Length: 315
Image (cartoon, rainbow, N blue to C red; front, side, top):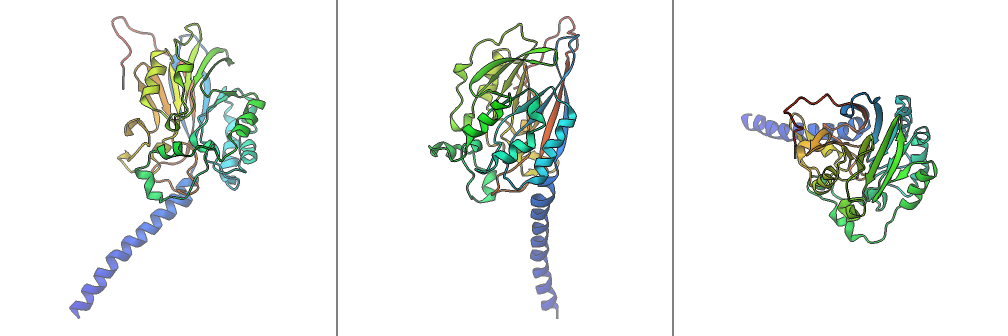
């Protein structure tokens, strides 16, 4: 009799673990993956007396045509009335996703906007072990020479609406009452970034100097900061995507540290915002302890400097 009780206990433990695992996967793939949230940060980067502006930061939608809940949620963000929309790439994940994306951002396209590409705007996702997310770097995308997604059509559709293509380019635009200088680079983890093409001190007479990129590689972040850019926006990390509660991201899939896998931080003299993004690869459709997000950044005036103080540098 005692032997049978021990056997039942031995079987019950693995079954309970299996049940918890199935429940966890169901939560991560059905609930949290579709639990979109808006994050808000105030960024003290403007000169005293300048009127605040709002920047809506979108990233990593990895959009497929059937994601209607995500499409409708992005459409609703126009109610925030942002002064500028910034898309930091990995927008599509399917060759037929451009009409769905244009429907998602249709209200926002009437506002000033800028964009850069991520690797997944060029290269279609492929099946892989979802757990491989915990150690992949996406460097293998460099080995795929011919893009398989309509990235040029994607870019043309945004520029036709008035958004600026910032892949290895600089531009000047009016945002609210501010004269904004923007510098951007293509995706570094597929070796398409060309910072040398935009290098040099950002214009000191601009009210705001904004740097945009897909992957927050520290070498590029540092160059932006050294050239005088005040605010840097990036995505790519998915915030870690599979996180541990009260611990955070396990990986970032790029050179940035885990503590800055998402959110607002400092990088030397610049402010840095890394978006956890809104989507996932269709072949890894899970998020845990890292809900999908868009961010509304309200740029406000810096507090006056006190004599004998300087801005701290954080790397």
